[in-house]
Every structure is written in structure tokens, then in C-alpha cells.
Image 1 (cartoon, one colour):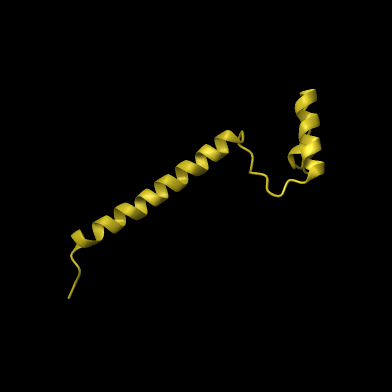
Image 2 (spheres, helix red, strand yellow):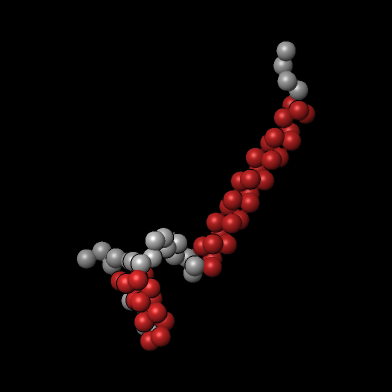
Length: 70
């Protein structure tokens, strides 16, 4: 016996809302981090480099974990 589509509409709405909220959270996280990927397991060296960069106002690519391709 087939399932009427009206029974599946709540599930489709829930799955859609999970997708929308997940995308929204990812966009907000990306915006708050100025478009850079989030940093995980930041050690003391990384913290010191970030503090030094913020105090001098000079941002180094090495401090951000970005390679220039050379």
C-alpha cells in the first residue's frame, strides 16, 4: 500500500529546515572569521603569533596558515 505524500511533507520540511539552518550557521561562522577557515587545536606558538600580529597591526600569511604557493 503506497504512502500518501501528505504523510511525508513534515519530514521534508524538517530536512529542509536542517539544511537551511546548517547553511546559515556555516555562513555566519565564515563571516565572523573574515572568510578564513576556522582554526582547530591552536597551540601556544599560534596564539603568540596571533597576539603579535594583532599588536603590530601587521598580518603575516604564516600567522594565518596561508601558503603563497612558492
